[in-house]
Length: 239
Image (tube, rainbow, N blue to C red; front, top):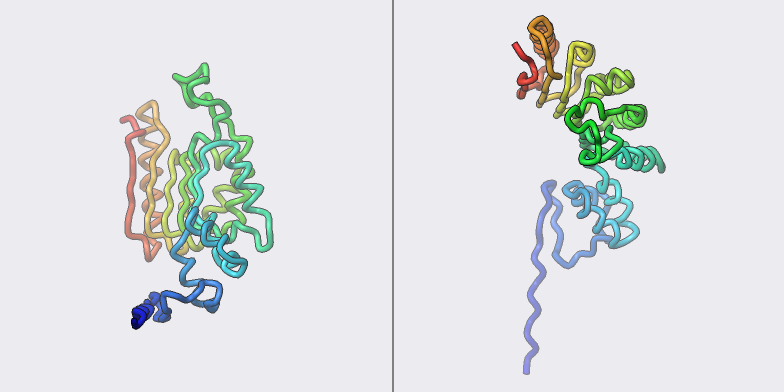
């Protein structure tokens, strides 16, 4: 009896027009095609792909840490060590970084005797580690810091690094106050989306000062040609 005919492998195309049969082995693809494929991956998917073959590893491993979230002091120490090592340093492949306020709490929330006053539980001795990362991450396109003002106060290099980033498209900053105005006055590049929230005010005179600060921030943003979206949380200002 005649053997059943094998189905012909289908072809597919990438966004740049490369046509590949389904049976093509990844390791046999040229560099342009591999780069195109791995550009859609990050995190665990990129890690799994990097383990399939040595040649593929060289293209995919850089996407493993392209988006990172830091939640604890231990996270920040580990990120500092790993991102600033290797050649080229892994931090140059970082595209998105989120640093939660919990990064700067030494003890778990439930065990803190001052749980009713969370502002007394924060300490910023690790702020220089964050500054090191930001200074070495010129290709960041998204940055989220939940506590800008205290971080910039304890480590001024953080504000300088943010203001010097030319690839930022999306920026989320919590706890801004008048001391952070120079950061906004020096922002440039491709910034399109900005999400801001202020520190809390206690008296009307302080509220007026904060409203003047917000006005100055908006004026500083006006020269940005690609800026299209602003989410401004003023709930901390008590009038």
